[in-house]
Amino acid sequence: MRLPKFHTVAHRVGVVGLYRAGKTVFLTSLINHLQNHDPRVLPIADGQSRIIFRRQLPPENGFEEFPYFEHRDKLVYSRQWPVKTRATCQYRCQYYRSDWNLSRGELSLLDFPGERLADLPMAGCTYGQWSDFILTLFREHNEYRVYSQPYLDLLARPDASPEALINTYRRVLKDLFLNFRPVISPSTFILTDAGLWVGDLPPEQRFETNYVGLDRENQFLPLPREVRDRRPELAGAFASRYEVYRERIAVPLARWMQKCDELVVLVDVTTLLAGGLGMYEGNRELLRNLMTFLNPGQNLWGVSLSVIGRTLRMFRPLHDYVSEKWDLTWGGIRRIAFVATKADKVHASQRQHLQMLLKDMVEDLVGPYVEGSIRLDVDYFVCAAVNSTRSTADGRLQARFRSSDKTEVYTPSLVPTAWPHEDWSEMGLRYPNVAPWMPPRRDAPPDHLELNRVADYLLNG
Ligand SMILES: Nc1nc2c(ncn2[C@@H]2O[C@H](COP(=O)(O)OP(=O)(O)O)[C@@H](O)[C@H]2O)c(=O)[nH]1
Ligand SMILES: [Mg+2]
Image (cartoon, rainbow, N blue to C red; front, side):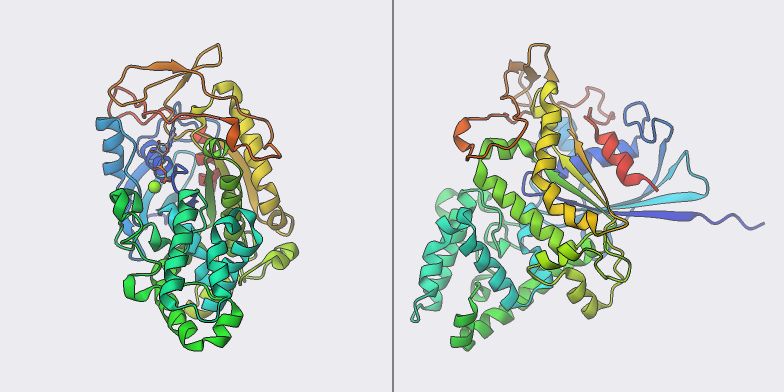
């Protein structure tokens, strides 16, 4: 007798967000819940479905394996948050669902350092297009121009030496980094290919040993068209270094993203509220680029259904470039979950406001793709992957500030219902970071807020 064949329902989920948006914690908690699924704790399909974890699968496409156990042990045994992600890594597993017949799920998740998001546009750009993209940002966005002006000035001088250009560009990236502007490209300036992050270095070395390129000899910078035309040798050298960098850093990530059918975009709204307008604008810029680049909701043949999306495009969308070179079939993103993370850092009464702010921030960025598409779903969530506070009746929060400490009660700022029109960095909004609060039973998955809604959305057949 032949056994019936199982149909595989595959979900490739890209989890994106800036550095410290909460990606690694989100994935660790999600995997923990799936491996030990309790429908009462993580109700899926109205609590009617139980996930039966079958086995973990090895990573594909040459990625490292997501260090799930390391992250989880850190949460459970040290009561500390996972370490910073330094390399792109992947988690894959197979599962069954109690409400499925003859189907098995295959989930593939990718975690990558948020810094690399700034390099993603490279995958769809020639050196000239990338240069134009960065320099347009530098010229046209006030938030960037205040720091990039010295570089723009130097570019206008016909005699600027390559060394002077490199030093000035590096100084600009340093200022952008110190002022929380996220478009820092090449991102190896803050996180090297070998995984050395600027924050790990002693302050005096912090911006001395990282380079704008794969190493000291292979640095490159954006040059405007007139300089590219006037100094073809310099432009040629930068272009060939750019190509090597692009193949190594941007393309593997882009190729994977190209195959995603679902995207989780994590936004830490609390940090944007505490940080101010510059940080908000920087985040929006990256999200706008990401949408332009991934062009979600297009049909199977790579033809965009979004007219507005086409006119908004600053660089060629990924599929034009990557698919012609590698002949990959483009599945296309059909579902996007925008998630306001770390919702436990605000009082329970304020959490809905996080959703309003998130929606307000991204709706116009994704709107053109939704309107132009017959198959793109977008939804908004407010989530805490590891709920580490408890709300009191009088608007305060109870939490631990260090893993060993007793709990303390404090008052976080309220959450506005709309983004202020003026820069809010002086408003003094504060949502302190807390230590993770894990259940005393060590094999129990963490308490969460609405992680089940996100999981339900993503794992829906
Ligand atoms: N209170 C709380 N803090 C969180 C949560 N998730 C992340 N964080 C905080 O955000 C920091 C960055 O999280 P991480 O997942 O490493 O961010 P990533 O850089 O996007 O991978 C952590 O070190 C925690 O301080 C959460 O669910 N609740
Ligand atoms: Mg991470």
